[in-house]
Amino acid sequence: MRYRMTVLLQAVALLALCGATSARALEIYGGVEATATNMSGACDNAASGLGFSGTCDDKDTGGKVFVGLQLLPLTAVELGYIDFGTTKTSGTLSGAPAAPDLKANATYLAFLLRATFFERLTVYGKAGADYWQASGSLGSASLGTSHNADGVSFMYGVGASFKIIGPLGVIAEAERYQNVGDQSKTGQANINAFSLGVVLRF
Image (cartoon, rainbow, N blue to C red; front, side, top):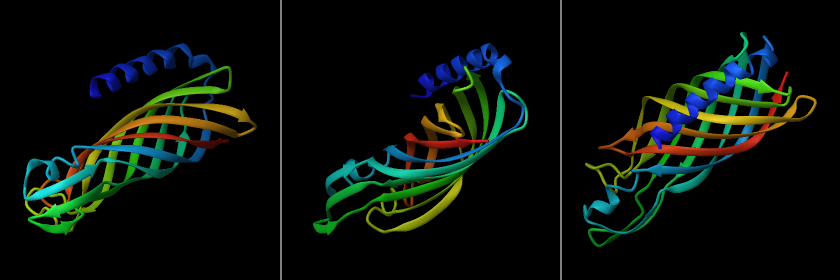
């Protein structure tokens, strides 16, 4: 997944150079998206035989809001908040009913490299840092006991938006959030987020 993202980011950089002549200097934008997430690694402790017997589903849905500012052509800075949802786990822990889980969200600040074509289609790559918050009971030292954790990690992704009418457009993104959660307390995941929504550009 990381290799594919690197290739896509390189492709966006090339497209940005090709689309330089159509970029505007100043733009403010914002939007809201529905998100499908895959919290890869979150279920590892539940599946490792630490007294738990049952099922663990690391896929869920969430949501995302964001605002951005472009001061220079081809680049932008974006601030956003994303809810990753919750793992779905059920079974028994040492013979007792249990539903250990991981719930997480993140606030991120990212730098974007963008290219706009035909004044309607914008493609971009992004990379930045995120402050994540997690709660759960999938930690390696505390399976079944809920804890809270927070920390700073990094994220990256690619996306595209298409202007429909006036400032209104649609947007689609694929993002990766690394090392969300605490391995020993809440459980930890590398989260792939796929989002679709609407964007307003001014």
